[in-house]
Length: 200
Image (cartoon, rainbow, N blue to C red; front, side, top):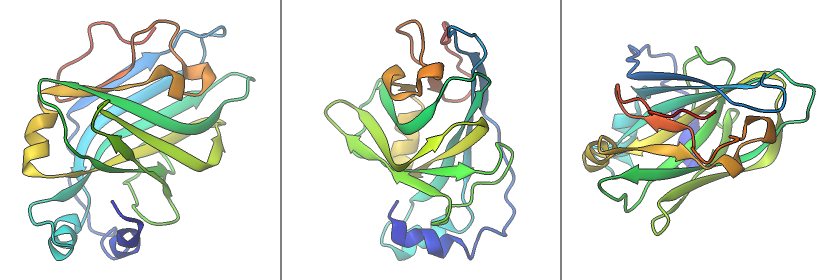
């Protein structure tokens, strides 16, 4: 999603949409202190006005959705700086291209505000490795609770593909207190599918 579209969304953020919670995963990550918690929710919530906006931008049928909310709850005295995030796609079908953005939320319950003020990073999709990376120019010093919104530009074709698999966080991209002690990555699972072995 291009930055030029962020300001246009400001005209639509007062529109109220129903929230459909498709999946919720609470995962306590095992660290030396065993106190840091990472919470994710798959929402697939359409952003107000995005369908019309994408049509005007020459992308009919596309819609911007808050695909997931990511919340970090830091409860240690150790430093935890969020410098970026990387997610890897695992599915029956590959994704040729993906447009996504990362926004900061005031709280995990707050509606995503896709404005320049809340914008953190646009994702860089690598079709060969099937990964999307978000690099933050302004690093976030995690204190207490920090919530992020992962926004995808979704076409009908991509929507079908997303149902065939899930995204997993690349552990090394997470702040140290939230990195997994095992090789399993935290999965953003579509619908009611839950990972058999959550991060521990």
